[in-house]
Amino acid sequence: MTKRILLKLSGEQLQGEFASGFDPKRARWIAEQIRPALDDGAEIVIMVGGGNYVRGNQIIGQGIQPVSAHNIGMLSTLMNAIALADVLNDAGLPTRALSTVEVNQFIDHYTFRRAISHIKKNRIVIVACGTGRPFLTTDTAALNLALEMQCDAVVKTTKVDGVYDKDPMKFPDAVKIDHLSYQEALTNPNIAVMDKAAIGLAMDEHIPVIICDLLTDGNILRATRGESVGTLIS
Image 1: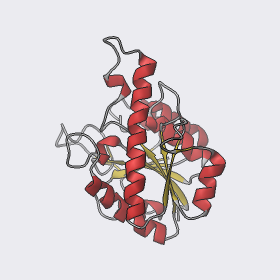
Image 2: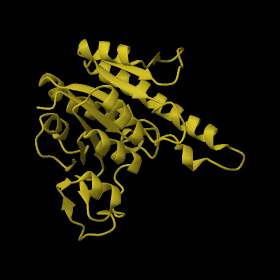
Image 3: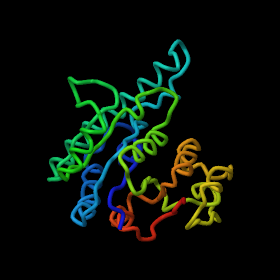
C-alpha cells in the first residue's frame, strides 16, 4: 500500500460546474473521495493549482510584468487552498492549509516541520503558492513538495482516465496507455499531461506518478492502495 501520497488538484477541477471560481459541491465530492483513503491509513498532502481564477501566463503583457503575473497566479492557488481546507474540515476531515509564501493574515506559512507535524496528527495538508517562486508550474511544485514530504507517489487527477497516445478530446481513436517510462513521458511530443520539468524531477528521484480521472468514484483510494488506476509513469 502507498502510505503517503501527494494529490495534485488543478484549479480547473475545483471550479467544478462553474465557468470559473470555486465550486463547493465539487470540493465536497473530493472530500468524500479522500475519506476512504484516510480511513484506510493513507496520509494525504495536496498541492492546488489556480487556473480557475487566473494563470500567470495568461496575463503577461499590456504592462503586466512576468514576475507580477506569476505572483498573481500564486494568489489564485492561495484562495483555492483556503476554501478547500474549509470544505474538508466541514466534512469532518481534519485539514490544515499552508502557504509557501508568507501571508500570515490569511494562512499559516509552510515549513517542512509544520507540515510533518500536521501529517503525524492525521491531518490533511494543503499547500498553496507552488514553490513560492515565479516561472515554475504547480506540477513542478507538486513533485518538489512530494520529495520534501517523503511521499510514496504523486497522484495527478485530470479530466480523462489516464494518458493517451494523442488527445482523446480531439481524436476518437486515441489509445490509453497503462504504463509509461519517464523517458517516454519526457520525449513523446504528443504527451503533455504534466510539465516536463516535473517529469524530469520524478525521473531523477524515482518517484512514481499516477495520472487518473478525478470523477471516477474510488480512484483516489485505489491509487493510495497501489492498485492499477489510470496511467502509471515510472
